[in-house]
Amino acid sequence: MINDQTKANGFILSSISLGFNTFACLISCIIFLIIIYHLYYNHVKREDKITVVLCGHIYLTIVMYSSMSISMNIRSILGDLYNQSFDSSWCIFSGYLAIIFLGMSYMTFVNQAFYRLIRIVYSQNRWFQSLKLYIILPVIEIIIVTPILLCVLIPLNGVIYSPNDHFCNISYTNIPGILSAAAIIYIGPFCCLLFIYIHITRFIHEQGNTQTLIIKHRQSRDLLIIRRILIIVSLLLILGIPAMTLVFMFIITGEEYPLLVRISYFPVSVSQMGLSVALLFSIPQLKNIVLNLGIIKTVTPVNQVVRGTVHMRTIAGTQ
Image (cartoon, rainbow, N blue to C red):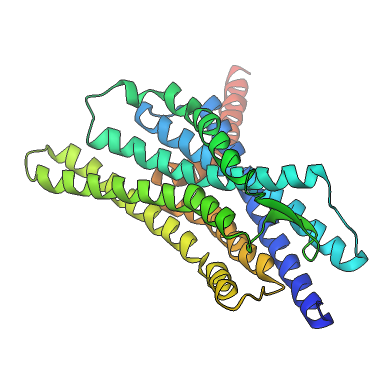
């Protein structure tokens, strides 16, 4: 039985997570719309288009996952306040959907690293540097990964309704289910990122002084960006350590901590909020888009004033 103090702590965790997820959703939505606007109405260099599109994928997945998390937080808060039950088929479906969105958010980083691998190591392969490929790549991954994830979790009864948390999620007491999801969502993408990073690093060091100065500068910039992305993703994985610690404590002691689910989702909310801001400083193309938008807004009124002044002088001259 959960005591009043535990309920109060759970309510606080859900409320703070709601704030973090709302912030992440709003910031990511704004940046995603800026990216779309920039692609359609401003000139983007050909070599930067794929990078910008991949950034758009990242922010879109943050919006989708944060939206699902907001729904979970609201249900937790309403359940704590009014003891409401949200057990339904839609709840189970939304639980699976949240897992898929979380997996997609990590795969977008793999896609970004894969593009830089192709551009640096296999630059002669033009087909893998096609913009259309990277636009449809997330759709292909959803079609491939989603059935695998569902085929693993559904037989294990992975997602269930948690009456203490008032939303549906993977039960942390279901060890096969949680380990299977972790392998597909976390470990798999991280291993891909690590392999790509090592392969690019070895390739650049093996090239030595054989490359031109321009190519070496571009490769160094790509390597720096991949390092930043790898650091960010590593920090996201580290934020999952508290939850995994509680899971292992449950395996050893056989006693489940009442707030295990909320504690495990809290670092994810922090990571989504931090990720939405950190990417702006990690990817130069994305940072330039946001900065240029502010410059355009500042310069446009000045240009209008100058044109208006010239027009008035012209009229005065004709008179």
